[in-house]
Amino acid sequence: MPDGSGQLQPFLEQALAGASSFAGAGTGWVDALRKAGADAYAAQGLPRRRDEYWRYTNLNALAEGGFTLAGDTGDIIIPDLPLAGAETLAGARIVVVDGRMRPDLSDLGDLPDGVDVESLGAVLTGAPDRLEPWLGSAVRLADMPMAALNTAFLRDGVVITIEDGILLNAPIHLVSLTTSGGGMVQPRHLVVLGAGASVKLIETYIGLSDEGGFNNIVSEVFLGEGARLDHFVFQNESMARIHLSGAAVEIAQGASYDSFVLQSGGLIGRNEIRAYLSGPGADCKLDGVYMGTDRQVLDNTTYVEHAAPECVSRQVYKGVLDDQSRGVFQGKVHVVRDAQKTDGHQLSRALLLSSGAEIDARPELEIYADDVKCSHGATAGELDEDWLFYLLSRGIPRPQARQMLIGAFLSEAIAEIPVAEVAEDFTTHVHNWLERHIDAAREGN
Image (tube, rainbow, N blue to C red; front, side, top):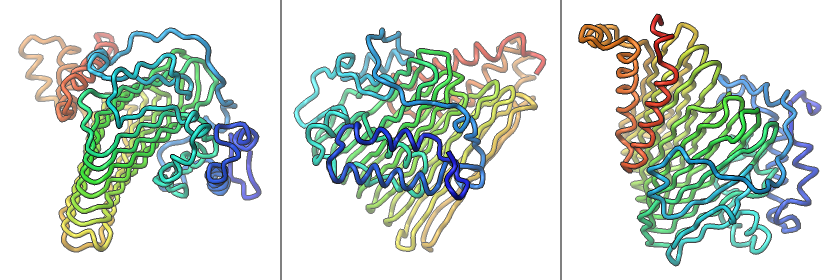
């Protein structure tokens, strides 16, 4: 639906029509938050290529898809999960089906006092005022139009709160399943860590149907002073599904946020992270690996704002692109005037395995302080022919030699993951992907 200015606004009518029935309706601040999301999305419309952070990712398929909000899902059988090691390690498993948390399928184990895992919908219905200080305060709606749409649909998701000083050793595993084609899901997740708290959060996104659909996931993360979150995301949705994920992370003094995203699914897979280093000594690490084939578009877009002195940020994204697939890296580091002694670095590296593959890389620095150490870089190319010749000369068949070189390229990034079981699972997935896509039939490439 276009507005008077010609902006495309698909899904807005659905959000406005459903608002009175969503969880927490009738609570003043919740209604105001939904309206703010709807108004921001109405003003901006669906992102288009003229928008700075969307110039390389075309969402026309959303405007044409006719997606409707997924309804309640009945009984399902949870499949064998691809992250077997991480699943065994996890102390709690949260299951979300078609955007709704399913307590009946979740296993929260023996979480200690001071750690709460709840359905966002349940909290909005029963005790919404608990969320007012947090929900909606990290997302800057004018900068994130798809997060604005998600806010207009605010209905359900997961709330994780950890009180001051609690160090949770076993990870929490959030498993998100999509079941049917044509469905749209709009989950909203909220993670709040008190001062000195620590946890590892693993997110797995997989589809139970090969049909198309639309995910629009938004997470808000708040880290208190000295808190630490290790955040690992595995996106392996259906190759026909559009998967958009946006996270807004507030990092207080001395706190650390360490993120790693592995993407191999989705017709369009976009991972957007906006991190705000708001206290001295805050630390942010954003890493990722993506593997594209066919006509996939895999997009990693980041914005890191250094708003306090002596903060550190690191970004490294590495991708492998085959067939007609396309990768996107947009990374911006913004250093405000008073953020002296900032240390910021970003790097994008991509391997192009076919003449039709493409990478659009746009690292950027915007610096207003004068005592900083910042750098950025981007490289793209083909496999090193000298190394390939070396392996071939040792009697290794060409497909296996290519797999070895590609695997080594990606493993360098995965080796940075601080949890061995997650690193092993990600390595296994990379190996299996290479086995499927780099085979004898492709040895002429």
